[in-house]
Image (cartoon, rainbow, N blue to C red; front, side, top):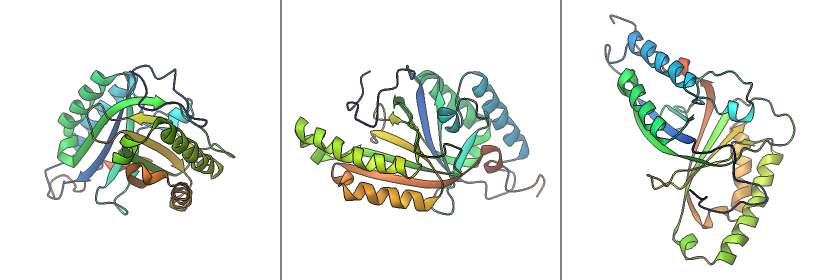
Length: 246
């Protein structure tokens, strides 16, 4: 499948991606009462996560930037900034594996713990490292967007000019030390067209970078949804709220 938009000066197609699928998710906890979600469910979820890693899944976007990073499932703790409690991005070997894997997680107990929005697509553009130190940042920023009516009506020349303007903003992101794990295409089965995943040092970096995008009128052709969260091991975020028997 061809890319939805062409390469730019900043972003390039990812020849290593093949048919790798991405799974974007947001989850809201629903284990308010004892017995809904237990330690046994947590153990079952972790067993499925271990199986997925063995099957070639990437459960931490840190490994997209650094293939030697630990294979520990990582998600964003978002409950202090958003209505949902967690968010994250997994990658599966292909679309069939992505769908089957999410079903296995749900059946293991995930569905008892979270009310989840799963968005499945394909990796499109290659990752880019920001300027300066390339170490693991403690926060992440997810940008979901779809092209609006103005983009659909724009001429090829207008779209090319827009891409050049946006590249200015993306270079500003890289200057902030932002690592961008390429771009994922989501319009296979969702109204969102793309996802961008950023590793950032803190929320202030996302705020400053987005101001740069506003300055070049990035959002004149898109409708966006932004999610900011602190990166934490998924094992911490799926602990039961209630002890056994309480």
